[in-house]
Length: 402
Image 1 (cartoon, one colour):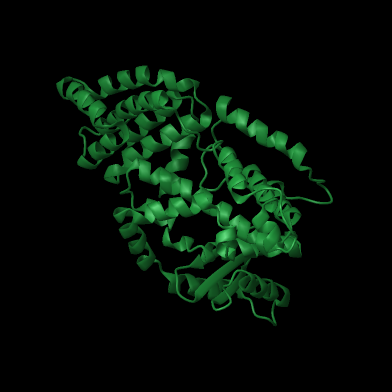
Image 2 (cartoon, rainbow, N blue to C red):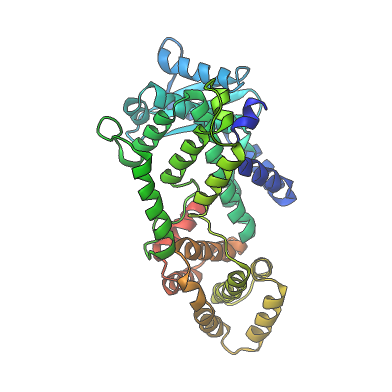
């Protein structure tokens, strides 16, 4: 097994291949890659940041070169920039070919030690290693043309891609402790010696996250294109125990197979994207139809793109039944609202993540015609309240998609 296969989260790879096999997503991805203004981005960095050389920042330059060699990216031309920001952050810009651009904020470099920086460098180069650039998630979603299920699948893949990149970072730094402390600094701003990390004790936070995903009405953090940091810490710890990681780093045999590790990671990822059984899915589809119809008719008519998305979300049978009632109604909006209130009641007992995901998909349906006016926004906001989801969550999704 080569380095790439031993590191990559298989769920990332399967989602990645499935999405790229979809012709519509493939076309959108290729279009946005071609439209990316790489020269403009580089010009901005040259004008406002410091380009790293072996003389100007020898340590950081060395970390990047070592990570390149470890990840078999030594043939790539990597430009490294440092920009002024107190927020710890880093990024990788890569669109294939031989050129990679890495950026690091001053806040990150001044708050992290050598091993932690090596983890971050490996993480960012991991995105290049796995060709994650081929699915520019935010850029594709900005088009506003994907149906809801494909948009959600794309965001689920994005979370899995981060797991793969974290593994690349762990392979480069070879220290689970450094990877975990970097997450702690991103979460709370401090690590050792102020924090004496204990995974068993920290697992209580992960357990609370699981319980809150089922019960809480506070949904402000239920939506993210990245896994929650507790999930990433758990995933890094699991991978560090695998046979593959132990052998790659010359530490002998591990106590877990990669398949066992991936199964464990899937379980904690479910805190963010729980799966409904068939009965719940049927209830979900009916409520989705009436919610989508409420939004669609709020501006006076049902657009073709909105109709296609409703069929995609609810199924043809539910769509045919519902659309017939709407066409006969004197007040389609009133009927849709009334039916949504009734059909959504069984969903209120679901966890916050499920309810957030439901509203999230409704927003994507509403944007099918690439426009949301005030009436549609009011409908979405009222639906969020009915579903016990913080109304500002609608704006969070819209900001993410813009």
